Length: 245
Image 1: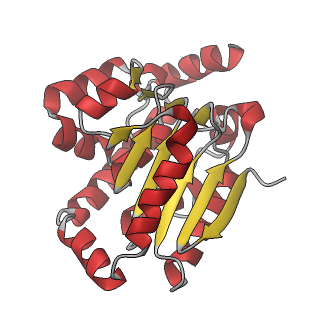
Image 2: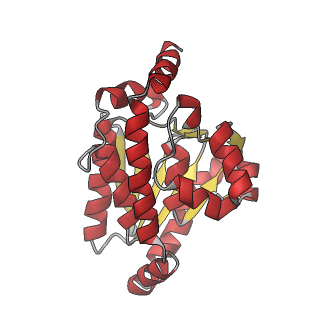
């Protein structure tokens, strides 16, 4: 069974994380599939919007650490790197529905979404520094711009988890939705986007993101530092402790 599932519904490409035994931790093959499904959807005129979700008890627990450590050369063809830059280049809108854990990339991916909905079980966390790493996906730029420097410092430097109410207060999510209604509500919003005039929608998205080149530069800077940190003694000891758990 594929750990990334895809379904097209009335102009919306629904992409779901489906690796419940590993709390939807993303391995390299999952990153590869995610990128392929997004690129295919971008090229398909019948697809007007994307939606991401996990199971009803977990969005994603982040990177599969063991798999990531075995493939830690973060060059441009690394599946995780390709996925991050694919997110940045998306022309069509992206909606996310978050239930349960959204750790690491599970939270940073939301900074690239147009609409984000969560239920009361959602728990967000950015534990990069905790693992002796640095943020990715442009989060070191996008998060301070979104929530202010001091709050971003709290979330990134302490790396503690926070709930949907905090995420909503910080404008990281659009709305908190009842658990049983989350997927249907997020899909209904994605379908509304899919029914908008596509060119006007895409151009408006571009106009709302005038600093894309700055984000791209920041992502390259982050990856350079992330690669160096992965090889550090500090990170190796943190990862060993993490894997023993």
